[in-house]
Amino acid sequence: MQLQPAMQQRCTVRQTATGVSRTPVGISVRCRTLGSSTHAPTQPAWTGDHWLSKFVNLLINTPPVYAVMKVLAKQAIMSGAEKRGVDWSNNVQRLLAKPELDALEKLRAELTCPSVVLPSYYLMPFHAYDEGNESWLAAAEVEPATYAMALRTYKDQTSLTPQAAFAKLRGSTTDAIKAYQVQHGLDTNPEVLLDMGCSTGMSTRWLAAQFPQAEIVGLDLCTRFLAVAEQEERQHPLISSVTGQRRIKYVHGMAESTNLTAQSVDLVMFSYVIHECPAAVIAAFVKESKRILKPGGVMTMIDNNPKSATIQNLPPFLFTLMKATEPWSDQYYAFDLEASMRAEGFKEVITVETDHRHRTVLGVA
Image (cartoon, rainbow, N blue to C red; front, side, top):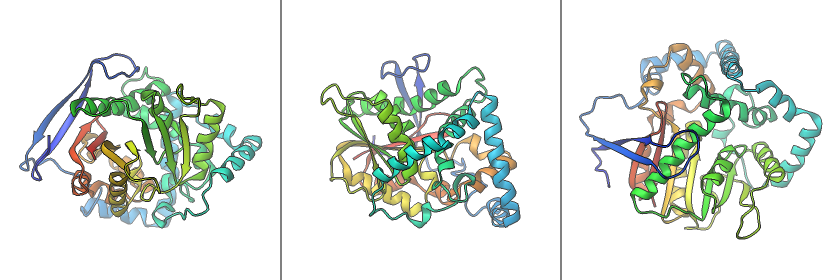
């Protein structure tokens, strides 16, 4: 259904299947439409122009305070993850060991596109790293941090392993995509998928498992992340039964300017990427996605839900630490993603609340 400007549709995915296996069978989408009279806050008070946001920003912009915040944020994430079985330290030590790092440096050199210039918005101190994503430590910590995020989402389900929590989190989004395709009569067997901001390939390989006939491109700005992804693919390649070639290809590039052929992709996915970007860049992502998608192709953006009660009601300690490690939070939480997608010509734009913290926003090109 096409939504009117004054209306917003909020949807939840109900999974009738059990366990962490994911199939399109037994998935239903339940939606309710809220009018403009709804008084629910559209974003957390600790973001934007709210006085609380300004106070938190003042703390973050005070160097001695910010230095302490970075340390506390990292310690909080690591300790919580390790208590739930994430082997954080050993994973990092293995990747940063000299033989491993030498091999990764060679792969990085192979993957680097000399014409790609890193934009200023990307060169920020994300996730408590002074160099942002441009460090081997950041690359080594992607996997444990990804598991930590999944465990945090299901913190009350203490029996979940890190891997099971990851599957549950990612599965909720691909379930939503498949249900959306069925609901709108779209192709449920896309041929070409693009994983924008693929990082070290965890989301890319999940997509490959969920859409086993598809060829997948993983695109990222960080060559260190791509080197880790490429190493995994070379060690455990996913081979097409049709072509006999690798199904996944990793590309160094910019999501706002991919250089891909127009109308060449069936599904574009941004998975936990856009909260790290300013509003103008998110809008550019939407525009480029519309250009490269085939008619009837789907764009989906998965990220923190600005309207999530969990996120809006985070304790001051936690939202201060979160904001300290995510420099574009104010712009992300204020950005009207659905409106941007409609403005670029996407149809059937909806937001699916895939869990109590996250949303999956979908539209048809």
